[in-house]
Image (cartoon, rainbow, N blue to C red; front, side, top):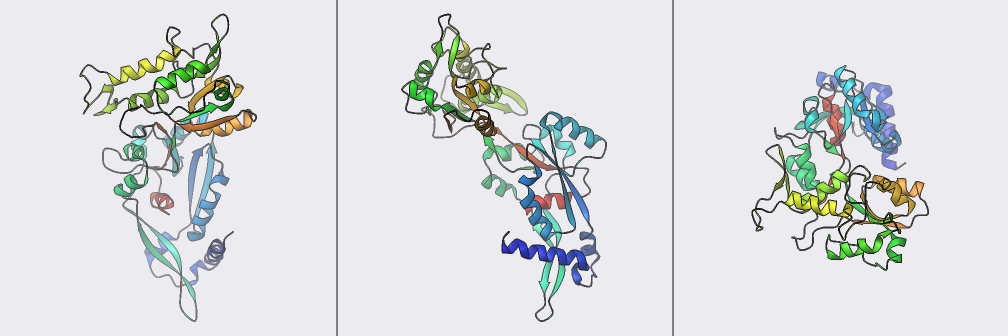
Length: 368
């Protein structure tokens, strides 16, 4: 433990045993120092992932206790909605970035600032710990847009211009590839574009038996249920192709503003056609079908050359297929387009309950 944290612990212990060791005359400060408990619900991460953050925060604010609870993904949303409806919900909770708008009425937006009591050492000869109220400005809209990837501000800033949550991290689609299968096919370059070379590589990486059944798949594209996050992959292709997914709250998929292409060009439909061709036996790019196992399972078995997924699958593969020789690369882009990196985000946002009596303290935890 660092020297700084040790000092903070000493201060915290002193504060808790001596009621800040000073004469309290400010009622606002007294009110700000009343012991409270913040309840925090999340999925996937155990408490130890947040132990350092909680410890540092509690050292500065010893009157704030944080109860952390991890729930299983399968039960999380049902339990969260029931708890909120019955007024026993958490003060802070995670929601998927795609849930923000439907949860808006249940969320407390970020305030302009938060005010907390801090321990301050004062005096030259006789030193005392004096509680001091400090007001901290919250993250501004500009700072949010400057310090996070673009999709975050699009997701968390709703139509009233307020921020309804903040992510701890943002995950995007990546290309997982089997190095042994690439080497066996004589392919040394990882595909950067969805171009002719990509299609030729997939053809080399796909193997069929005498009956035409796929025994080694070049890429998991083309179908739905047996491809992990297939809708995200298809959405990324549409976005790269220039499709406007939403306009004025309406799902579009085929809008193409500010383009030089012919007016009858449908970017969403073209992306869908490109995607489904990989599961069409009459196409040169045929490498997948609905009869194959789940894409993750097939990749771990060593019979799939390329799959697209998020970082959370990395540990699963390393644990369940420790001998698999694989690597991860960037999601391919459309060749010849402006030098932009268009991807699809998958992440969770930390939000504060509208019913929480401790919204100030909950948001302060984010701003610390």
